[in-house]
Image 1 (spheres, helix red, strand yellow):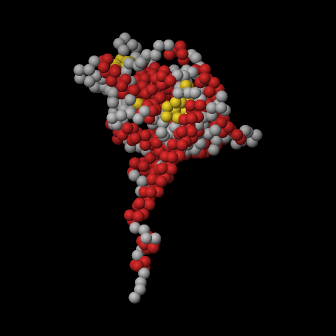
Image 2 (cartoon, one colour):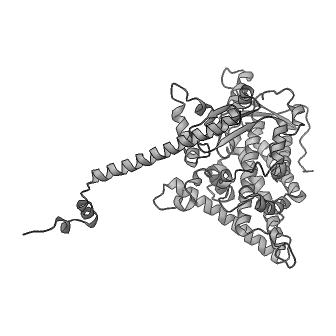
Image 3 (cartoon, one colour):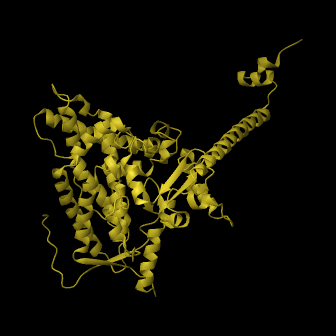
Length: 483
């Protein structure tokens, strides 16, 4: 009696049996495919790197070579893990150790230019980066926007909720920029000043009430202040400042504006390879699902505020007077008869720009703030103030036609906060047992120097240094009424 073994096997196993494939054979095939793809990618990268090195050297510039592009998405996500291993090696890997980290500019400062000259190149398989320190050349680069176009692919991680002024090309940028820039008006800046003074006063009150052991959580507190100012100016949502040492702040598990925005910003690079649709899958780890939930929560919050503003404007009211109000009013006015329809923003573009304003206005201000209130002795740079008067030497808000539209917003907030903190008080490090004040300041400076680049430059552990705030003797009480 003859019979077929396939009749007694599941379909998948029967197919493998007919092809004479065993699980081990399949595994070997998958490994071969993987190594084949890895070899093909390595070969392509090596050839591309060779070609880019030749192109860079043809420029006559000193070159440093990286085996992988800093803009590679997988590298950007895995870089901290990779360098956690590389840093433990008993030897260095040349340019990779020096220029492979996203924060290498901060750690190198002017060292590379002092060694290599006013211009040098870093070459990867994907790009050639040319770094320039000559002020006249920098001014020329900013002026020639057509020849030196902004690499938009770098900014696509900011298109979480839609395109915005940071992610679009020149023609579309002009349209969006006119509308966004109009939102940063004197009414907005007045609100920024008032809210910054109030938040800084409350933060100082919390810090001066701390015990002699010093203030902990300075970095978290500056981020909270920055978020609170943005909440008030962007959505007319006022929050009472709560220090990270306040038990009430630890017990608040709200998924509102502030917490959702923080989670989204902290995971923007990760979302480049894992968008929210993937993060929200039932099989995804809980941490991933929390990121997806925060992304959804922040969008829902923005949509609620957008619809509320539209309802107020439809009723003939002036709205809440926030950044959201201005963006919507500009877009709605362009829909009227005989209006310029090119000056409108879609809903997705409004959401995209609201997000990027929050992103840019939060991390930049908070990170700068913690560096200025840290109890350290900053290094002196003789002649720096004189050089800043020359174009191409100091441009924290970029330069040229595409400079940051929120420049004055940041300046107003920064001045209000620092003036409040240092008008009547001074800060010093909380000293460890047997430690001198000079060594304490040196330790605090070391914490500032230990920085990493997430989306922006950030101290790795800004809360590890405790600080003591003391009132300056003979100073009058601070005026509480905002000017």
